Amino acid sequence: MTAAPLDDKAEAFLRANHAAAMVTLRADGSPNAVRIGLALVDGKLWSSGTQERRRTRFLRRDPRCTLFVFPTGGGYEYLGVDTKVTILEGDDVPELSIALFQAMQPDAKPGMLTWMGTEMSHDDFRQAMRDDHRLIYQFEVERSYGIY
Image 1: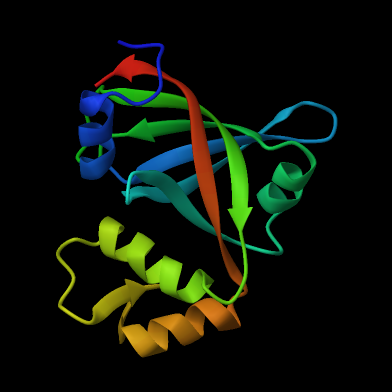
Image 2: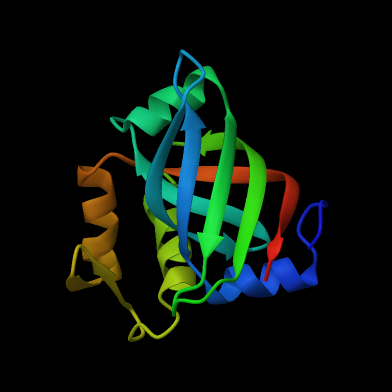
């Protein structure tokens, strides 16, 4: 267990496990939890979202967020991560999304990614990201803790 930003063991846990709960804060201060996928991309912790998501609105008002990462194959290990979120938007998001989803799908065929249960080319994936108005949540780790 650690109360520091990500150490090597926490980073290894994140490279192997991409499922998490993302907890943001509503305007009244109450928590809002949703399930997300996340991954380390070039040493940065990222997840995908859209302009229209409630969590995006919550983060624009208050960038604090806690992640609860759990093991893909079950078990009792976990990693808690307290963060501040920067929302990455713009024309480069489709390309950033490819990097994110490649990190989450290390066994994908070259040039292919799975989106919404459908395998697609990188070009089709980029277009899907544009059509869905995707953005990237970038998490600045303030503290991590857990049993991992």
